[in-house]
Image 1 (cartoon, helix red, strand yellow):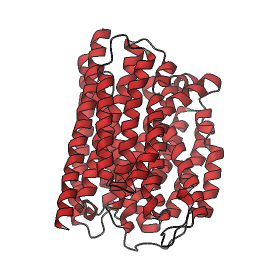
Image 2 (cartoon, rainbow, N blue to C red):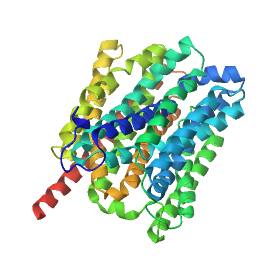
Image 3 (cartoon, rainbow, N blue to C red):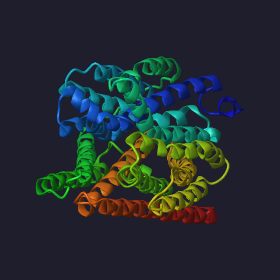
Image 4 (cartoon, one colour):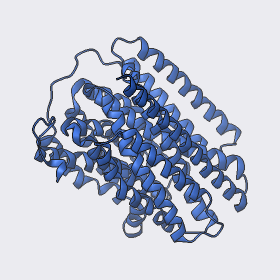
Length: 476
């Protein structure tokens, strides 16, 4: 396989060692993404088992998401300070141990604590996974390996509800966590033996102020987004809570930006954003994940409330989306190693927006094959976009800043999906204020058109970087 073939002048590791690192990183990524996505479907069963109310059970999902989001930037900075290997091994060890802790939890309090710690472990691995791959693979293969990584994340996100539903139908909710233990131990053994150890990259004091401001900003954003996604977000008490979190996020964000511009050794160096192509690729990624987040939340309402499908059938209707990604993403990554990644990702966005428009115009009584075909177009478009765009981000910063760039990539993905979910929540709360199915359908279809608009914004951002790329070539 070409990914593991060696050529004279290749940087990184020899082919066999690259294969071991890839196995460790991708196994860990698969577990972390699945655990962040498939628990939602089990919340009712978990609430009954532990005898708690639905609002408490929501924290079985939110605890993981919140702690992961708050620590993504922190672990990206720690990896640059201490090296990828110790941070990744710490994160994987914590994630595996707390997976076992979740599985044996006998109370809601214990499960929430385990989920919060599990999110910290997941953040430590997800924030630097692409950077580790960049460090061990030669530049000529960067697009291909990032294509496989993007494929894994996107497909895992889409397939998680199906796997979760299958496990719940045959076993108990504890198995959603117990299945992580064995592959986690295998991945840990691979990581310890295969990821190269490098000396400390810098010895300056860690930016504690930046870490606190970053965690405050990102955590408050997640809480505000979750508040908007509540079905009764028009409630006055909830409105006050959302406003409070939003103000805190704004204060944290302004403080963080001011701090990193003033600090001698900031948590996230502003210089990585001086590359216009990196910044535009990051913004394009954010807009596209907002679009995907909207779609992944809106479609279950359409499938179940409007079309009358069961929860499990609705999950199956998502299957063509990851199939489209599997079909396209590896080839897109391969092309990105030979041609301009921005061009390939822009083509992918064009296909993606066509697929979203097809979903937004589904007929009143859509057949399963019709839904699947339109979802397939979306998956193919997103698969064509994501890996070249990730390559564009990582290749436009110096190699020593790969950890920071990898963290920004993870943040864009996490918050794009959260903001997308929040937007659907707002529309459902404002428009579908009764049990009227017609109003709910209207809100869902408007959400899908909002996803089309977000992906249209991503196209405009992508086209602007193409223009910048042409100007750079003309000057050269």
